[in-house]
Every structure is written in C-alpha cells, then in structure tokens.
Length: 359
Ligand SMILES: [Zn+2]
Image (cartoon, rainbow, N blue to C red):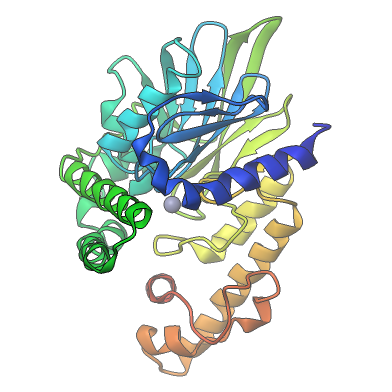
C-alpha cells in the first residue's frame, strides 16, 4: 500500500483521540470525514484498503478491544465482537453507518472476554468462526470462562474505578470536567450491567489449520484467509490474512506494546510468530493499540517472550514463589522497545502461568 505513512498517522491520531474523546459521549452524530474515516458515537472506522476498515473506540462505550470490518458486494465479515453484549450491540449499530448489508461472518481471533463476549448479540444466521479451542472455551467444555482469573482479574476492578470517579466528581466544580467524569461513570456502569448479561457464545464453525473465504467483490472473489497459528497468546488463536491487500489482523498475537500473558504458551508463542512473519503483509493490525509499525516489533516481542521464559524458569529453579519472581524478574534490558518497563518486575499473572506450564 502506497500511503502507509499517512495511514499510520491517521490511525495513531485515532488512537490518541480515544482518550480525549471520552467527553464526546454526549454526541451521537455520525461523522464522515474527508479521509474516509467514519465515526459514530462509539466507534471509529478507518479504511485501510477498499472496503476494509480497522475499528477503534471513541471512548463513549467500553469496547476493550478493537476489530475489523470487511465489506463485500452482498455481505459483511466482522473480526471480533468486543467485551460485552452492550459493546457488541454498539458495534452492530455503528456498522450500519458504514453499510446496510447484513453481517454474514463473525471471526473470533481467540476466546478472551474482550474479543468474544459480544458474540451473543449477533443475529442467529451469522456464522461464527474460530479455533476448536475457542469453541471449547466458550461452550464450557474446558470450564466456565466467567470463573477464570483472566475474566475476573480484568472485571473486578471496575466498581472501585467507579467509586474513584464518584469521589472525583464530588471534588470537581468545573462544568466540562464534571460532564467528562459523569460520562465515564455512565460508561463503566453500562459496562458492568452488560457484563452481568454475558452468555458465552461459541463459534459454530472451527478452523483446524487454515480456511479461506472468497467474499464476492466487484471483479471477483476477495480472498480472506483464516489461519490457526497454534498455541500462543491462548491455546488457539486465529489470524485473518488478506493476501491481495497484504493486510494481517493478528488479534492479540502481535501488538505495538506488550500483551497480556495470563493464558499464554509463552514458550510456543515466539515460534508461532515466526510463522506470522512469513506472511506477506504491509499492514499489521492488532486487537489493542495502534497499527504495528514494523516487522521489527515482532522481533522485539519474540526476544521478550524467550527472555521472560528463560528468566522465569531460572527464578523458579532458585526456589522463588511465582509472586516473588514477578517482583524480582528484571526485564529492563527490553525497555528500549517497551518504555513502560522502568524497573524490575512483570505481570504476576504471566509469571504464574509460566510456573504452571513448567510444572
Ligand atoms: Zn486476548
């Protein structure tokens, strides 16, 4: 794609806009900008190729993760459904600002709450496609995902956050600030209410290796490859690859920043990324954060994963508990790539996970 630089700038601006636009929760107007970006109350659709949109949040609704829309001649394909029925409904509603065609396929890149808990609001005739592992996680065969530490650890902090915002509201006399805080409280409350309504809904079609969908477009069939990469961020991730447009939607397997590892196979993930690097793409989209700016970001993440595994294994051998290891592990040699690493320490959920896998 020729204009990748300007696209990068555009998506970066949209990502920055996310935090500033929280205030705009009051506005519900749909806004088509000259760049082709379509904005609704809850969503920003940034075109990355003809009929293909990277979907990010305005901040008015808690979506927690991003998605992608691919428009064909007769129907639509959506990648990932966000964090709750409420967020999924907002997505379906926002899509109408882009196209009136029906959604035919919903792809789940993986089973995580923030990518698949909007599944239930998609119409019954929508085919949901994911890995067999994603199906078994969401249909309860492998336990109840709503009782897992991943879901609980990311959800239990929300009431505390609401209380904190209420305290801020008490302190504030500024009209605009009060409106912003009230908007955030409303967003978090709507999120919590919707989370209580979640009925995990599994894919009804599974990909065991690769699958190709040929979507009718003007002049032929658009090739949409779904590739099950093996175990990485979870026990079964699927990426969406458009070989002609050279676009890869990698879910949570790749990101511009570090990625949650509480359910990961960190030792296998780096090898899975080798398979990803072999794909011929120019644009790399992920479930969180801005466009991944270069292939070197994948190299950096592979180095981090391998180092995290080796250092954790060493601390475990020395007899430390996972909790102590999480405090002591020193990953600051990666801070040039990940500026958020400023001192020793790593996410205890990642370290516990590696301990479990070693055992
Ligand atoms: Zn995830």
